[in-house]
Length: 195
Image (tube, rainbow, N blue to C red; front, side):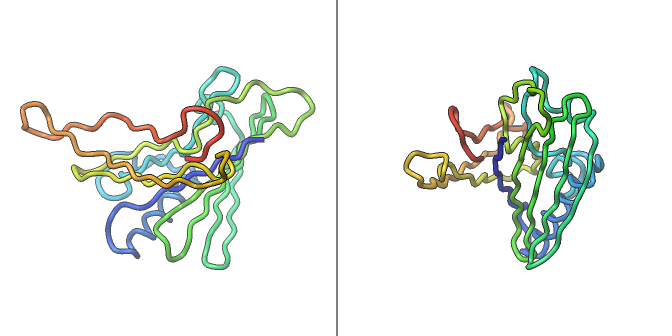
């Protein structure tokens, strides 16, 4: 069983707008909506509507596996939070992948867990390179701030180490425009970690 956690926060704006943006994105991912695509105008285009995790299963990228999976959705509301659950079952191997996202009524953040397990008796192919946070973001020319933490039960000391990483805007060489920054990876290099 693999369980990894990730947290994402909303683009800037008023708190109410940010809470609504996070909830809207989570609902889109939960529902499997493809539009609007990343890069579309407005806040809806800032975060890709794809499931925000990835892995390699039996040597193939998760995108191939997930496209053939049977998809079931569940939702639980209560006590100021909503739990959005997507259960994906591979009809060929029986692998079950669960994305469980939690949004809060007054916080502009979403946190999620990814669980993978094989409920059958036969051995499953190797599950590797699991990324609890594999999300495409499109931004305007402002800087993007990524907040992340490592540690906790994954660290030998049991401590949590919080970090901030600023992805600066990049100007073209001739100064005539903005070009996109290179991709950024926020993860531990070795061992078990949380993004």
